[in-house]
Amino acid sequence: MLNARNTTLALLVFFVTTTLFADARMLDGANIVNSGSTNTRGWQIKFRSDGNGVANAAGSEPSPFPARTFIAPSSLVVQFFRDVEAARVANPAGRGCMKSASFGTRLTVTYHGWTSPDLSCPGQSPLLAELAGDVDSLVNIAHPPSGLLRVHMPLEPHVAPSGKP
Image (cartoon, helix red, strand yellow):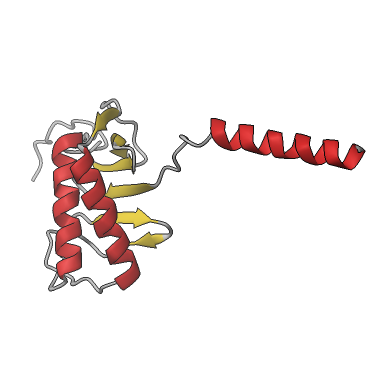
């Protein structure tokens, strides 16, 4: 009698719990990072499968730019997560490209422990080209904070030139 009651109670708790949380969706997520360069500020976008994202400045210096939140259209959300999963599974090699030493940046996506090659140089891979297009669309929606870095130069004391050669 006691075992039947415990079993019934356990089943009741199970069904109530699964019914209450049946609508709860598991969210997936990815990070999109622009490394920045010597002269430009980097940024990152944290993006979730429900379409919500946050774009903020990256780097060690404090940013004058506040984080920005955004919501991407569902069609782009589905396309991005489909393309990033396909690229992760195939793991295509990227291709290096020439970049300025002062202004060259890297654009990568991290998803489930996998980091893409530099998407600003997708090479011949159609998978990386598709993913780069998705990232470009997200960047246009998110408007991540960027800009030139202010270079702090040490002040040198002004010394009047002497009259001697």
